[in-house]
Image 1: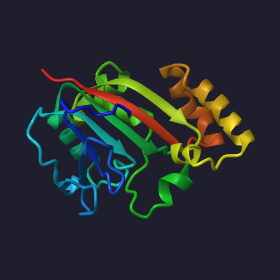
Image 2: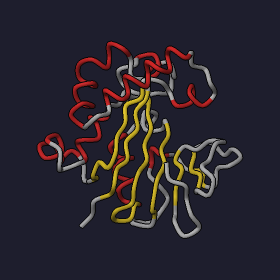
Image 3: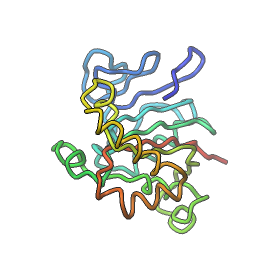
Length: 199
Protein backbone atom coordinates (compact mmCIF):
# COMPACT_ATOMS: atom_id res chain seq x y z
CA UNK A 1 0.00 0.00 0.00
CA UNK A 2 1.25 3.48 -0.85
CA UNK A 3 1.68 6.06 1.88
CA UNK A 4 -0.15 9.33 1.20
CA UNK A 5 1.76 12.58 0.81
CA UNK A 6 0.57 16.15 1.53
CA UNK A 7 0.11 16.85 -2.21
CA UNK A 8 -1.99 13.76 -2.92
CA UNK A 9 -5.68 13.21 -2.15
CA UNK A 10 -6.03 9.72 -0.70
CA UNK A 11 -9.28 8.15 0.51
CA UNK A 12 -9.54 5.26 2.95
CA UNK A 13 -13.01 3.79 2.35
CA UNK A 14 -14.57 1.98 5.28
CA UNK A 15 -11.65 2.95 7.48
CA UNK A 16 -13.41 2.63 10.84
CA UNK A 17 -10.97 3.46 13.65
CA UNK A 18 -7.93 2.29 11.63
CA UNK A 19 -7.56 5.06 9.06
CA UNK A 20 -4.45 5.08 6.89
CA UNK A 21 -2.30 7.96 8.18
CA UNK A 22 -2.59 11.08 6.03
CA UNK A 23 -5.71 9.89 4.23
CA UNK A 24 -9.32 11.08 4.31
CA UNK A 25 -11.26 8.46 6.23
CA UNK A 26 -14.71 7.62 4.85
CA UNK A 27 -17.10 5.37 6.76
CA UNK A 28 -20.78 4.98 7.56
CA UNK A 29 -19.92 4.89 11.29
CA UNK A 30 -19.12 8.27 12.90
CA UNK A 31 -16.23 6.93 14.97
CA UNK A 32 -12.87 8.49 15.82
CA UNK A 33 -10.70 8.72 12.71
CA UNK A 34 -13.59 9.08 10.25
CA UNK A 35 -13.41 12.42 8.42
CA UNK A 36 -16.42 11.97 6.12
CA UNK A 37 -19.49 10.03 7.22
CA UNK A 38 -21.04 8.47 4.12
CA UNK A 39 -22.90 5.34 3.11
CA UNK A 40 -20.82 3.69 0.37
CA UNK A 41 -24.02 2.14 -1.00
CA UNK A 42 -25.27 5.58 -2.06
CA UNK A 43 -22.12 6.95 -3.71
CA UNK A 44 -19.00 8.89 -2.79
CA UNK A 45 -19.37 12.58 -1.83
CA UNK A 46 -16.41 13.75 -3.92
CA UNK A 47 -16.16 15.50 -7.30
CA UNK A 48 -15.22 13.69 -10.50
CA UNK A 49 -11.50 13.12 -11.02
CA UNK A 50 -10.32 14.71 -7.75
CA UNK A 51 -8.73 11.73 -5.97
CA UNK A 52 -5.24 10.29 -6.49
CA UNK A 53 -5.63 7.00 -4.63
CA UNK A 54 -8.31 4.98 -2.87
CA UNK A 55 -7.72 2.26 -0.29
CA UNK A 56 -10.44 -0.37 0.29
CA UNK A 57 -9.44 -3.01 2.82
CA UNK A 58 -12.12 -5.64 3.36
CA UNK A 59 -14.93 -3.31 2.25
CA UNK A 60 -16.19 -4.33 -1.20
CA UNK A 61 -17.65 -7.59 0.07
CA UNK A 62 -19.93 -5.56 2.39
CA UNK A 63 -21.71 -3.28 -0.09
CA UNK A 64 -25.10 -3.97 -1.63
CA UNK A 65 -24.20 -2.50 -5.04
CA UNK A 66 -20.71 -3.70 -5.91
CA UNK A 67 -20.83 -2.43 -9.52
CA UNK A 68 -22.17 0.92 -8.35
CA UNK A 69 -19.31 1.39 -5.88
CA UNK A 70 -16.72 0.35 -8.48
CA UNK A 71 -18.18 3.00 -10.80
CA UNK A 72 -18.00 5.59 -8.01
CA UNK A 73 -14.36 4.69 -7.30
CA UNK A 74 -13.59 5.09 -11.01
CA UNK A 75 -15.55 8.38 -11.21
CA UNK A 76 -13.69 10.15 -8.39
CA UNK A 77 -10.21 8.91 -9.33
CA UNK A 78 -8.07 11.07 -11.55
CA UNK A 79 -6.93 9.48 -14.85
CA UNK A 80 -4.18 7.10 -13.77
CA UNK A 81 -5.31 7.22 -10.13
CA UNK A 82 -5.12 3.92 -8.31
CA UNK A 83 -7.42 1.82 -6.18
CA UNK A 84 -5.72 -0.49 -3.66
CA UNK A 85 -8.17 -3.25 -2.82
CA UNK A 86 -7.90 -6.09 -0.27
CA UNK A 87 -10.65 -8.65 0.29
CA UNK A 88 -11.34 -12.12 1.69
CA UNK A 89 -10.97 -14.65 -1.11
CA UNK A 90 -14.08 -16.49 -2.30
CA UNK A 91 -12.34 -19.88 -2.06
CA UNK A 92 -12.36 -19.60 1.74
CA UNK A 93 -16.00 -19.97 2.82
CA UNK A 94 -14.99 -19.39 6.44
CA UNK A 95 -13.46 -15.96 5.81
CA UNK A 96 -16.02 -15.05 3.16
CA UNK A 97 -19.15 -15.92 5.12
CA UNK A 98 -18.32 -15.84 8.85
CA UNK A 99 -19.15 -12.13 8.92
CA UNK A 100 -22.94 -11.73 8.68
CA UNK A 101 -22.52 -8.34 6.98
CA UNK A 102 -20.74 -9.81 3.93
CA UNK A 103 -22.87 -9.64 0.78
CA UNK A 104 -20.74 -11.42 -1.81
CA UNK A 105 -17.61 -13.45 -2.47
CA UNK A 106 -14.84 -11.96 -4.62
CA UNK A 107 -11.98 -13.34 -6.72
CA UNK A 108 -9.08 -11.69 -8.49
CA UNK A 109 -10.87 -12.77 -11.66
CA UNK A 110 -13.84 -10.57 -10.68
CA UNK A 111 -11.75 -7.48 -11.44
CA UNK A 112 -10.87 -8.67 -14.94
CA UNK A 113 -14.32 -7.53 -16.05
CA UNK A 114 -13.18 -3.91 -15.60
CA UNK A 115 -9.97 -4.32 -17.65
CA UNK A 116 -10.38 -4.31 -21.44
CA UNK A 117 -6.93 -5.91 -21.84
CA UNK A 118 -8.34 -9.16 -20.41
CA UNK A 119 -10.65 -11.59 -22.18
CA UNK A 120 -13.43 -11.03 -19.64
CA UNK A 121 -13.12 -7.26 -19.94
CA UNK A 122 -13.13 -7.36 -23.73
CA UNK A 123 -16.17 -9.65 -23.86
CA UNK A 124 -18.22 -8.34 -20.93
CA UNK A 125 -16.96 -4.82 -20.27
CA UNK A 126 -20.43 -3.51 -21.03
CA UNK A 127 -21.50 -4.56 -17.51
CA UNK A 128 -20.01 -1.33 -16.19
CA UNK A 129 -18.73 2.03 -17.41
CA UNK A 130 -15.80 1.80 -14.97
CA UNK A 131 -12.58 0.95 -16.79
CA UNK A 132 -9.36 0.04 -15.02
CA UNK A 133 -6.01 -1.52 -15.80
CA UNK A 134 -4.91 -4.25 -13.42
CA UNK A 135 -1.44 -3.17 -12.25
CA UNK A 136 -0.74 -5.83 -9.62
CA UNK A 137 -2.52 -8.66 -7.92
CA UNK A 138 -1.65 -11.15 -5.21
CA UNK A 139 -3.22 -14.25 -3.72
CA UNK A 140 -2.53 -14.78 -0.02
CA UNK A 141 -2.95 -18.08 1.76
CA UNK A 142 -2.93 -16.42 5.18
CA UNK A 143 -4.70 -13.21 6.19
CA UNK A 144 -2.29 -10.31 6.50
CA UNK A 145 -3.51 -9.62 10.04
CA UNK A 146 -2.52 -13.14 11.13
CA UNK A 147 1.04 -12.53 9.92
CA UNK A 148 1.26 -9.12 11.61
CA UNK A 149 0.29 -10.35 15.06
CA UNK A 150 2.36 -13.53 14.87
CA UNK A 151 -0.50 -16.02 15.06
CA UNK A 152 1.07 -18.46 12.62
CA UNK A 153 3.02 -21.56 13.43
CA UNK A 154 6.42 -21.79 11.75
CA UNK A 155 5.26 -24.68 9.54
CA UNK A 156 2.09 -22.87 8.42
CA UNK A 157 4.05 -19.71 7.63
CA UNK A 158 6.54 -21.67 5.48
CA UNK A 159 3.74 -23.53 3.68
CA UNK A 160 1.87 -20.26 3.00
CA UNK A 161 5.06 -18.70 1.57
CA UNK A 162 5.60 -21.67 -0.77
CA UNK A 163 1.98 -21.67 -1.95
CA UNK A 164 2.00 -17.91 -2.50
CA UNK A 165 5.21 -18.16 -4.52
CA UNK A 166 3.65 -20.81 -6.77
CA UNK A 167 0.31 -19.02 -7.10
CA UNK A 168 1.69 -15.55 -7.84
CA UNK A 169 4.32 -16.35 -10.47
CA UNK A 170 2.18 -14.79 -13.23
CA UNK A 171 -1.42 -13.80 -14.03
CA UNK A 172 -1.83 -17.23 -15.65
CA UNK A 173 -0.60 -18.96 -12.48
CA UNK A 174 -3.08 -16.91 -10.45
CA UNK A 175 -5.89 -17.91 -12.79
CA UNK A 176 -5.01 -21.62 -12.52
CA UNK A 177 -4.75 -21.33 -8.76
CA UNK A 178 -8.11 -19.59 -8.37
CA UNK A 179 -9.87 -21.96 -10.73
CA UNK A 180 -8.34 -25.33 -9.83
CA UNK A 181 -5.98 -25.96 -6.93
CA UNK A 182 -6.20 -22.94 -4.62
CA UNK A 183 -9.62 -23.82 -3.16
CA UNK A 184 -8.22 -27.19 -2.07
CA UNK A 185 -5.70 -25.57 0.25
CA UNK A 186 -7.57 -22.34 1.02
CA UNK A 187 -6.79 -18.87 -0.26
CA UNK A 188 -7.71 -16.57 2.61
CA UNK A 189 -7.16 -13.13 1.11
CA UNK A 190 -6.32 -11.33 -2.12
CA UNK A 191 -5.09 -7.91 -3.15
CA UNK A 192 -5.43 -6.05 -6.43
CA UNK A 193 -4.22 -2.63 -7.58
CA UNK A 194 -6.32 -0.99 -10.28
CA UNK A 195 -5.42 2.08 -12.32
CA UNK A 196 -8.30 4.25 -13.59
CA UNK A 197 -8.47 4.42 -17.39
CA UNK A 198 -10.29 7.48 -18.71
CA UNK A 199 -10.63 9.26 -22.03
